[in-house]
Length: 261
Image (cartoon, rainbow, N blue to C red; front, side):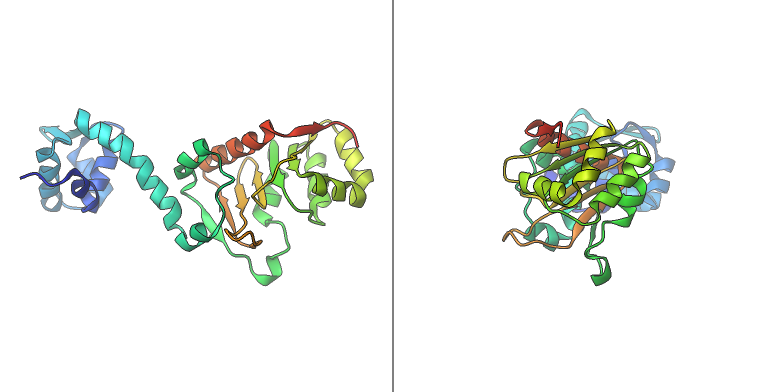
């Protein structure tokens, strides 16, 4: 009697990991044993279950996914990766607003699975993230969505402009007004640089901040009750960087460029 396929996939780490290792193509037994850090005696019973359920074939000592196996693995990998995102800190994700993420990117949230949830110390609460700051100045571009005014923004922007970093910022009207009143002279110089691009977003922004450069993706969210929180998400993974840029582009589509101050 066959096991339910769901049990075959999730009730054994060895079976699950073997299927994942075969996703990119056939593999020899020795490679699988080394990759899974197991023995032939321990793996063979699990392989038998996979073969009985028509998920894996083998000839001699080479194993590969069946057509059914490939379909199943291709569909389950995004689910496993999505679970990995939330397992980083399920309490964080469960208490923070994610409604600002558009449906397409929400379905692809598994792309940011290699992340850390950062809870800054009291001394760092009001500082811009040092990793993002330092790497932005050596990046080709910096993209940001900002919903509050930080007194150090003009220092960061001066650093970016002086290092010829193409800079794109999206802000709500009130933050732009504050920026103008606090740093009108500098803002004009930024605009004149030709590499600073400012956009106004007139709709409700339900995220505290988003930042993407060539090295890091940063995202700070409101709590589900609307409260501000100092915690934020940070990742240097390539997939997360691309996901973050797509999130920025989503908000850019509904933003209006500011051409003069």
